[in-house]
Image 1 (cartoon, helix red, strand yellow):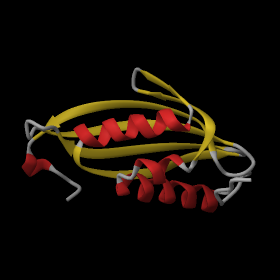
Image 2 (cartoon, rainbow, N blue to C red; image 1 turned 90 degrees about the horizontal axis):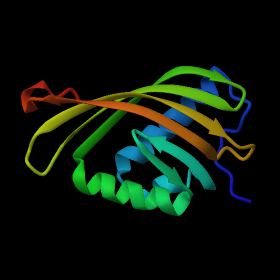
Image 3 (cartoon, helix red, strand yellow; image 1 turned 45 degrees about the horizontal axis):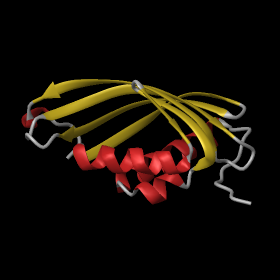
Image 4 (cartoon, rainbow, N blue to C red; image 1 turned 120 degrees about the vertical axis):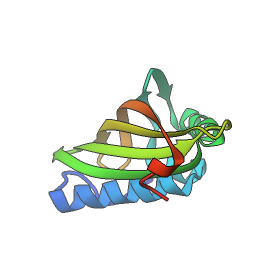
Amino acid sequence: MEQKPPFPPFTEATAKQKIQAAEDAWNSKNPEKVSLAYTPDTEWRNRTEFINGREAVKEFLTRKWESELEYKLKKEYWSHHENRIAVRFEYEYRNKDNQWFRAYGNENWEFDNNGLMKKRYASINDLPILESERKFK
């Protein structure tokens, strides 16, 4: 049985551990590694895209990091309850035309009893920025 501690129900401390683990994994930009934190039948909404299943997550993340270059993410605890965690985040990247962006958003996560994320709903907005305005280098 696949497991990804810490497990629900979460405390504030274990929710923050889960968030840090997600931030570290996403900053690795390794779709295979990141996908292992999700259930095989995970459900996502990422902006306007609906993604179902771990294999689709890997495909999505591969495309994402091929177009969002020099990606750097920071996640922040917002709230938790039992098997759910709410997160605020910012990340920066540049596109292939060297235009920099800072993306702002919120995520709602739901986990199974084994600590794998079964639902991820992300609302994200991009702001074009100058390279000199970057926070995350």
